[in-house]
Image 1 (spheres, rainbow, N blue to C red):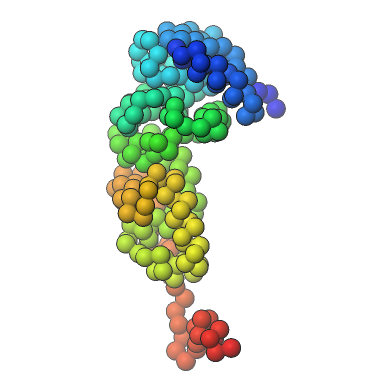
Image 2 (cartoon, one colour):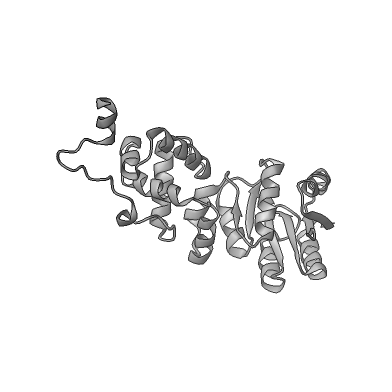
Length: 244
């Protein structure tokens, strides 16, 4: 498989060298060129045409204007904004300008590589440092739909999110879905990581925010499996186990 051309634009030499050496070792990348400014980003995009560009949001010049121009003039260059800027506002502006990914400089190199691969594959990646806050703040509905998909919730996680929004307990979710309560707890642990939530309450708030966005595909209640009705005169499986 051909390697993916990688363009690195960052005015910190140590960061450039770190990315230059680490990303190819994660497989699939070949550093084609580097730059130090927004003007360099535009020049490299015009020279290479098809590549993944890792662009520091704080390079000299107008990085966001460069993102917008590159995404418009050179669609083959997929932009991953790499930033130390905290908060969601800058991430929202970058994604709406045309960036396909936004990753924090506090991320591990594994996450940066994952983000670069996602962007190369035409997907959108938002660092877990920003996560749901970015998605719910996006004003552009089409960009928000793409960013929601980047959460990569499984069908079962979609079901659990829908039940969380309804205020169901772990026990009630387990009964509704016909799975063990410990299995629900396992899914909740994964969901909290994806939703960047520290506890169940924050997970519920994040889920509600996604639901209110109008673009998250949460499973409608009528599609969630109902608990099997008990036939009168017939013991439930748990009752049968107790009787055996």
